[in-house]
Length: 107
Length: 120
Image 1 (cartoon, rainbow over the protein chains, first blue to last red):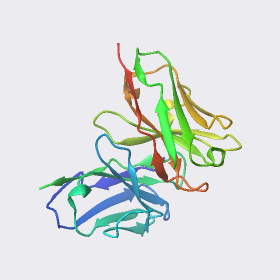
Image 2: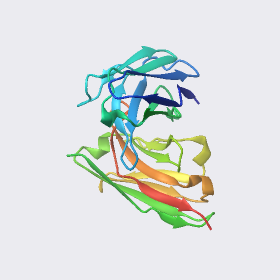
Image 3: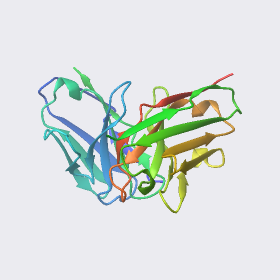
Image 4: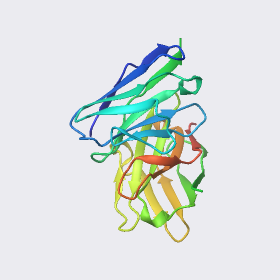
């Protein structure tokens, strides 16, 4: 099983600031990694797939990078609606796995 | 419009059984590998199981093998999760999830979730 480790666990930031979230895989997943945003009481929302492709309707302030074992989700300037929990997910091999999540909270 | 509607959650005693359903519409259900993903209270997302569209291959996370069974009825556009020998750590909101393309396992549509509580 591929283990995904996300850091930091919590990011405390103000609106307008940039955010950098990390996801590290226990073995190479090539570019087979996605990022999701999850808010309480809502279904998760796909942001990025194949490491760097924005999903349909996702604003340009969200970007993804990386390959192999190290990946980054960058939010260039936080909007109020961006405060949420973010998860990475690999599809390189079964079982599919998610990281433990990074909570982006308002400072 | 893609819609996924889960049902069947509830309170069940340890060792009990439950069957979840997910009614799908708005896309060619039989063409997609569908998954169940869960979130335990205060925890992160955990992928649980998947089933391919046509050849009916199944995949499971180790912790549910032998207890949870994923299946589908393509004639009814419905996904199922039969849950047996339930344990307290199966308590979670269960989501069915559709991948964004037939050849991938990134999820662009999710149901609203159904809560399963395992408690005596």
